[in-house]
Length: 419
Image (cartoon, rainbow, N blue to C red; front, side):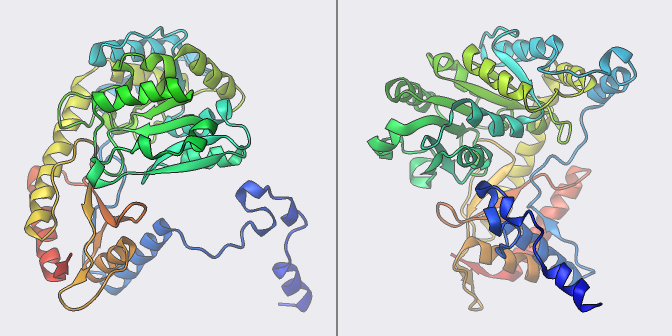
C-alpha cells in the first residue's frame, strides 16, 4: 500500500467534527469501550473455537423461540396479497385499534376509545424513543428503573434531559423506592418509566404500588409510561394493567407489545394506550417519524389480539420451563424462585468457584461460565451482581427441555460455584 493511501485510510473524514454531541461528537467511532453484549459474543466465539464438539447451553437469548401461531400467519398470508393493504398506514388502521380496545376491556376491564386513546407503534421500542420528544426539554428529568430497558433514557439525553436512576433491589421486592427521590429531582421530572412484569428481575407490581405512583404523579406533576411488554407472561396471579388503577388514565399511558405474549418477535407491532392527550402527542411525533406498520401486519396482529388461547398457551410453556430451571439451579447452589412474570430468571451471581477463581462482578462470572462450561447467561451489575437466565432456548419437546436441564445440572456441578 502506498504512503498516500495509508495516510488517507488513517485520516478522519472531513465530517468527523460534525457528529452531534449526543452520540459522541468529534470522538464518535473512536471509543474503544467494549459493551457487555459484545463481550458475551466474543466469549461465545472463543468457547466454540476451543470446544467445537461442546454444544452451547444458551440462556442468554432474549426473544421468543417459536414462530407466530399458524392462525396469525394464515391471516398475514391472506392480507399480504390484498391491494388495499399496499399503501402507507400512517398512524394505524382502525381494525387494529379496535382489537386493542377489545383486548384491554376483555383482559383488564379497561375501557378505551380506539379512535383517541390507542395508537399503534412499530413495536414498543420506537414508542420509548418517541415519548421523550413529547415532554423532555433541556434540563428535564426522566425517572427510570435500573436494571432496565434504556431507550427512553437514551432519548431523554438526546433532548438535553437527564435520567435519574431508581435501583431495583431485592429488599424492596424489585420495586423502586419513590420516597428516595430528592425533591429537587421531582421538581424537574417530566416522566416516570416503569416496566412490570419487570425485565430482567421478573418482579410484578402491586395494586398498592400503582396507586402510590398515581398519587405521586398528580402531586409532583409528571406523566407515567408503563412498559407492559411482558404483561401476558404473568405467573403470580392475573396480569395487572397500570390502567386498571383508579386515576391512572389521568396521568399516563401503557405500552403493549405483540412480541413476548404472542410469539411475534420481528413482526414489530405494539400499541400505546391511555390518556388521549398523551396518545395524541405520541401520534404527532410518530407522524413525523414513520409512516406506519404494513397494514397486513396490523390485521394479522388484530386477529392475534382477539385470540386469548395464544398468549395463554405461551404463558403455560414459559412457566413450565421456568419451574424446571428454578429447580435445576437450586440443586446447583443458586437461591431462586419462580419469577412473578417474564421469561427471565434473575439470580444472584456467584462470587467465585471452589477451585479458587473469584468474580468481582457478574460480568466476570458470565465469561467464566461461557468459556469454561459453555453456559451462556447475561450479567447485570447495575444494582447488585445478578445473572439473567432466559428460557427462550430452542427445545422441540418437553423431553428436550428435560435433557437440557440435566446437561445444565451436570455442567454447573462441574463448575463448583460459590456465593
